[in-house]
Amino acid sequence: MSGQILGGRHAACRSARSPLLVVATLAAAFVSSSAWSAITPGPCASDEHVRCAEYDATTAYRIPYRIGEAFVVQFEADEIVDDKSGGLGSGESEGWSVGGKANWFMFKPSKKKPNTNVLIVTNKRRYVFQFDAAARNEAAIWSLSFDYPDTRAKAEQAAKAKADKALAMGFGEQWNQKPT
Picture 1 (cartoon, rainbow, N blue to C red):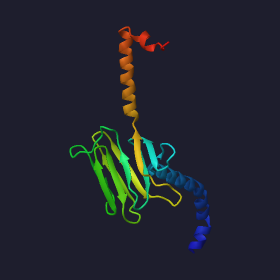
Picture 2 (cartoon, rainbow, N blue to C red):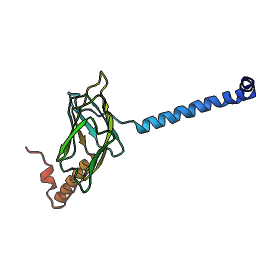
Picture 3 (cartoon, rainbow, N blue to C red):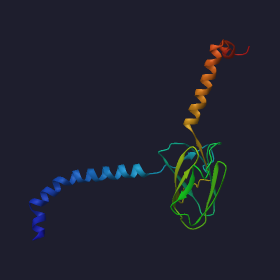
Picture 4 (tube, rainbow, N blue to C red):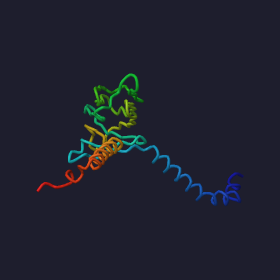
């Protein structure tokens, strides 16, 4: 009897909704997967083990690793983790050796596939990482450092203010001339 109901009028309703349901399901899957996917930073230069990323507070950074190989994450020179304003936390701490000093942390996985997320809060910023075992054809990251657009913008603003002040004092033409 249930076969007749599904094969009758209800089947037409189900198939009429089916394309819409498929599109909605695919859209939800795409949005949720893209919203939760971490980016793997690219190489700084020729060595694919040395990576650089532009800091973005809304980004999770994926670090592919290999068991027994250490890697370092380095922050801005004046950025530290202290007891008052920061810390480090992870979803899975077993299987990881962790050490840190000043503006860097070193991590070394010691057991098979201890994939985890790691959160680091410094005196200036918040970082979100996903540590995943490197795929067979993927290079492990040994070093990750960041470029900071906010720091760069402040430095450019300070340089412009200094140049504007020099121009206002009448030094502009001397500073802008090329040596002969």
